[in-house]
Image 1 (cartoon, rainbow, N blue to C red):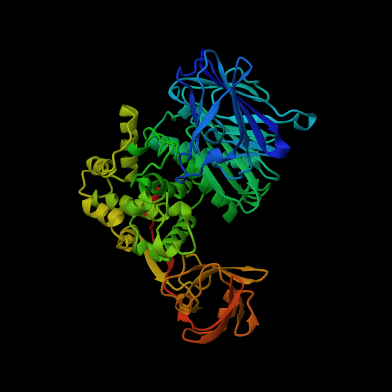
Image 2 (cartoon, helix red, strand yellow; image 1 turned 120 degrees about the horizontal axis):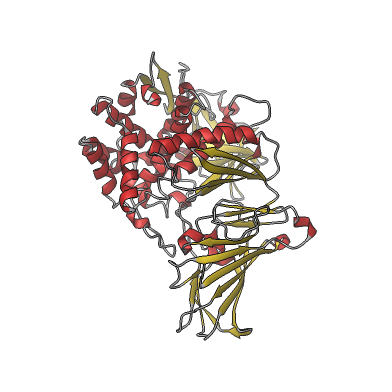
Length: 592
């Protein structure tokens, strides 16, 4: 393959967290070649300024220095040269999330959007990449894992040559480096790899078996063949981490090491269930957003925000199908699924933001609100993930009811996939709704107006009742009560109206909810409660259990370094804990 753009990447100084990149352009622009680095990464809708991590950059040609001028925060222009232009730069990599780049003496990882500069004018042309190993005996067991097509890479270690058909493809295949463990399987005949790094002990064969069930269900849902020739899961495990980011033939995941399945344990614990839900979510994105996507993302403009009101459809619907896939492929039963659903309903119900921000607004304002949350966010925004999932559930049940069970949301998703296979085009802002109505033959305008452009509660109780599931709300028993499958029948306990966490200094307030006792008393997010009725604040739930709604107590808290003392009248806990009661032969939509 003859290419004009070549990248060589080396983890040159793992102890200093530095990747070194050499970018060679054989035919640079006559007026001076321009280079740029994305300001954000697809799937994570926030300007992240990856260029701030470039710590050194210089240009040369024929062994001589070439002037390089920075044009903007993330772009540079080299002076005109007649021959080959070489750009050398170093990237500081110490971001443990799935969005950037990371490098230390134990592991390396990067997304192309944080390390590979785009060459202006060559974005749609093929490019070559060579990945080099770090120097030294300490790294002798390092390997490469990536879904990027290999071209000459060593079959044993993975170091060496790769290729991409365009810059967009280049940055859509993250790379894992290190002495990771790997397990392989086939789903519908397609090779899959699961690469796990970090310190752990786990049953990776069990992880592969369970993941295979998820993959095969989703491939068959949309219809074979799968939209990729091979797929790679890259999971880093540590402590108190969680997240994932989808790519066209792979996904990057981070999770708690304790969430991995353990040898000899057959049941699926809550932690492992959470991990399986994450795996399911990111894999579903292989169809829903990596290929089917808003027109605003075709192509992506990675220098500035890309606004769309459709994130509810691409993230919310994916959030609906992630847990739904687990029950449909047989990993969990109906009751376990309904427990997860009850938690989602409770989470949405507890935020006053659901009464202020619509799903379309939530999608459009992701850049400024969802990805930049603060202590007041539960009172001002609603998540297009969680409420979007509930809107998808409501839409699915509405279609099933109004079509007398002949159609479902599955039919809409398959039709949208067939459309993408036919034309490869993104969806205009009103096109998703039009397609749903055309596929089902139903008039869904009133539903979409209510679910997407209004703040009126979704008709979940009515729709679930038709499926044999009763929905009720009652006061949460304590801060850990996220909803469930049984009514407690207990009276509402006393509530302060906060979300808080215990720490050494006392109880730190994370959020203060609209209309609650704490808000009336003047408490704010970030305050640290140090005493409740002159007793040290240690466990807020236990302390409040001694009181009844209407009781008054004395609170002492610190705001910054200032001590504040106020008398607070406690309120009754609101009825925001969802209970889903399964009737005989209930949850019928989960079976088809």
